[in-house]
Amino acid sequence: MNQDTLGKPPVQNEQLAYAGVLDKLSHFAMLFLGGSYAAYVFLLLPQKVSINAMAANWHLKASVMQEKLNAPVGWSFMASPESFLRGDALSYLAIIMICMIPVVCLLFTAPAFFREKRPIFGVIALLQVLILLVAATGMLVR
Image 1 (cartoon, rainbow, N blue to C red):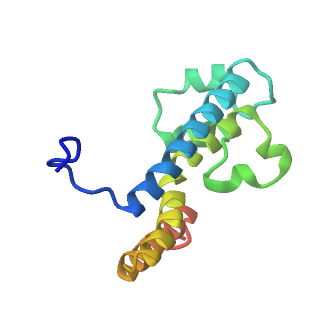
Image 2: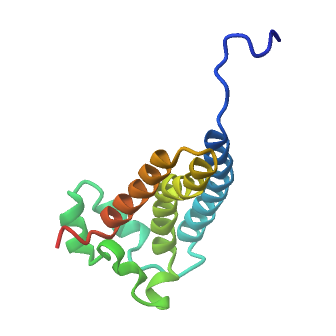
């Protein structure tokens, strides 16, 4: 037995699929987050909520601050290209992107489960994606 593999569990193809997608997307998302933050801070794009207004109201609860600053709620920042292409909206989108990385990883992992003849895990992965997408949309809250 090889000393390198002694005592280490085998790596499954599903794990490699998840890890590969996670690696690529997390690097891209961090670059996007840095770029969108720079666009916000250096005023490269128009803003709905200024940096000074955000800093002056940082002590408030999120709901109170949103109401006072008339900041977008939920997915309303994507209502039109004008509202979407703003420095503050791009920063928000970058955070959403980071939060959605596990969903994309599961989408790429599910086919690997089916290829490895483990369909129960593939179905569970797809159900997780469905549940997370429904939760992200807020469809059940309204």
